Length: 266
Ligand code: PMM
Image: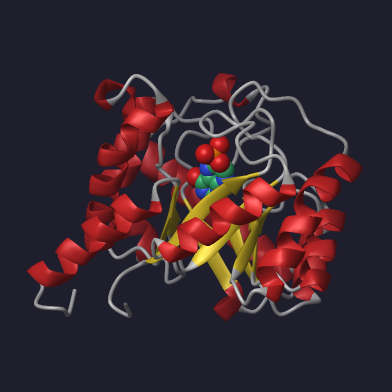
């Protein structure tokens, strides 16, 4: 479907992610779940080996690599497009060697000073998310004047750093970082203003799926997939390039409905 945003299916191979922690932490179950998401219409599988849920502590990088490597290997050899969700340059380098198409760095290059150089030396696409610090401190970093203006300003600084490190403009995507040092009110304003992010001229990825700010629509994370699918459609209307979701089938169906609305040209 050329006319819809790409759908990134979330695959957390972690014991402790907030919505799917522990479900896919054996390579076989992870690979099976990735294949199911591709069958449901996922364009890319976003593999993460380290939880970024609020309060999460960092893990050893050897452990992160040990979790993600067998899954990347299996998916790449099956011809599936892979995004690697990591803040670490050495994990990114390993993923690049194994053939991932995207490095998804929730820290936008702030966590590991070697990250941008590793990406610049490759031909992967780099997704730079807005971030204000590690998961164990981010909930204390939610002071903004105007959240959209401030996140745009801080992302522009990251864009300059990424391009300054030698990453080609055509290989850079951006992400407002919903839920990362943001209150529910901030998340809704950022969604309302998504078109301002798209106007920066880089493809925008949005990750709203199952996040805490959707709790009014579902107490448990897995009860928030309907709300997530609606946000996927509204994000598409705002011109985003991709959405990152857990329930791929529901978002793909919602985006297909949108496509029909626009006579197949949405
Ligand atoms: N959110 C999470 C993890 N990785 N990556 C990007 N680019 N954007 C996000 O919003 C994002 C991300 C946290 O959610 P999870 O625990 O469901 O993976």
